[in-house]
Image (cartoon, rainbow, N blue to C red; front, side, top):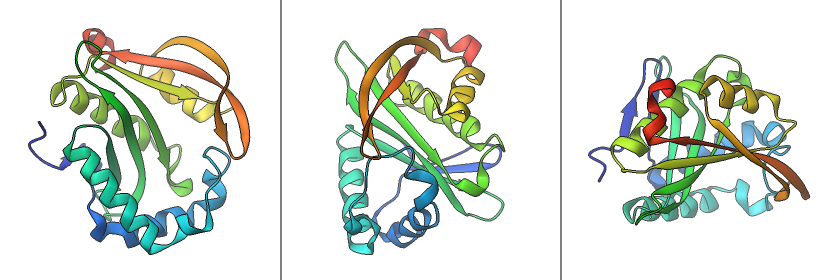
Length: 188
């Protein structure tokens, strides 16, 4: 079980947030609305309200306590600015010990290595503290920045699925990647 709800890297904090951070989360989503909509499902107007973000953070915190979902919110140490998140969902234990990972970063913070740094730490946490064996990531093939992150972190490309997820109202193909606990030597 997790010993804390805040972790840190050289330049970042990874935090699991409670509903009292809803205003910060809402501001992040509003500031990145146009940038993120190309890579996410269509959002309802309610998504961009404080009440929705409070409910969502409450739901995610309860899912975290039940070891089903973890969302690490990424903050820069230098100014404590919320710049993105990494979501680990569909956590299944037993003899599977696997989950899915998705991530997003602030439009003004891309190409600084923050996501690579944050994912490296999130994977370490999930393997060391959560005892997972495998983490899967699915990337839209036209998302060149995300493909670069997967390559840089040496995630293994495992396959390709047509019309895998609905993104911004369109069913998009995805490339499957995974990283395994027993293959950490090249990862770290």
